Amino acid sequence: MIRIKMWVSRLNSLPTSHAMPAEWKYEIVSGFFVQDAPTGPSSSIGPTPEFFGLVSESWSQFVAEIDKLGFNSSESTSYKVLFLGRHGEGNHNVAEIKYGQKAWDEKWALLEGDGELTWGPDPHLTVIGEEQARNAHDAWKREVVRGAPVPQRFYCSPLTRAIRTFELTFKDVLPVHLQPIIVENCREEYGEHTCDSRRTRSEIQCDFPDFTFEEGFEEQDVLWSPERETKASVERRARLVLDRIFETDRDDTYISITTHSGWINAVLRVIGRGNYALPTGGLIVVVVKGSFLNG
Image 1 (cartoon, rainbow, N blue to C red):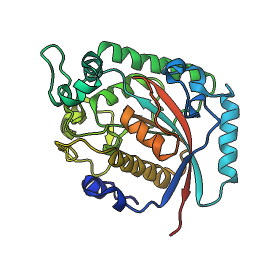
Image 2: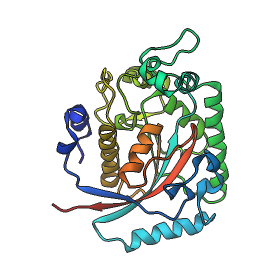
Image 3: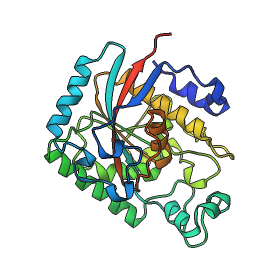
Image 4: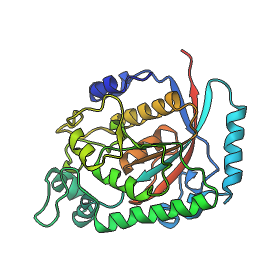
C-alpha cells in the first residue's frame, strides 16, 4: 500500500532526479474525446460540452469499449476513466484577471486581498463560481440520463473552492452509499500564493461533514511553504494520486476528482497529453492506461 503520508512530508525535499521510483507508467488512450488532441481548442469546446466531448456521442458504446480494453489487458495493465473537474470561479481568479498574471504573481497573490476583494487564505466561490458548479451539475444530470457511467469513486482537493464545487456539482448525482474522500495531494500548486493555503482539518470537517478524509490527513497545512511549489513537484503529487487509484481502486474503473487547473495539467502532463486550458467549473475526461513496471 502506498505510504501517502510519508511521501507527502518528503515531497518538496526530493529533487527531480531523485523522485520516488516510478513503478507505474501512465499514458492517455486518445481518440475517445475531442479534448484528447493536444491542440484541442478549449475556448470553443467549453467547460461542459455535450457528451462531455465524447466523439462517438454514445455512452453505451464507450462503456463497451472500456470494458473490452479491460478484458483484453494483461495482468500488469489496467485502464481508468478519470473525470477531472475544475472548481468554479473564486475571488483569486477575479483578482488575477483584474491585475493581469504578471502583477498577480509578483505582488497581489502574496497578499490576502486588495481592500475590495479577499482571496486568501483559502477563498470561497464567487456567485459566478457557484453558478458554474450548478451548470456542471446540470451537465452531469443530462449525461447520466444519456447513459454516462456514474463514477465509482470520488476524490476532492481539501481547498474550500473545490469542496463547495463538488457539493453543488454532485447533488443528486453522488450515489448515497459513497462518501467523497478529501486527499491532500489533489490540492492546487501551493506555496507563496495565499489563495492556495488550506484551512485546518477540523475547520474543513466542521463546514463539510459529509466528506471523509484520507488516512493520515494532517490537522495543519504541513505542505505550505513561503516558496512556490515547482511544476515537477506537482507532477510527483499527481503521480502519487494515480498510483493510489491504480493500486487501491482496482475494481473501480470510473473515478471523479474535483480539483484545480494546475493539478489537472500536472496529471495531463504525466499521462502525455500536455496542458489544457480548462475553464473554471469545467470538466475534462481522459482514459488512462496504467502499466505496472516490474523492477
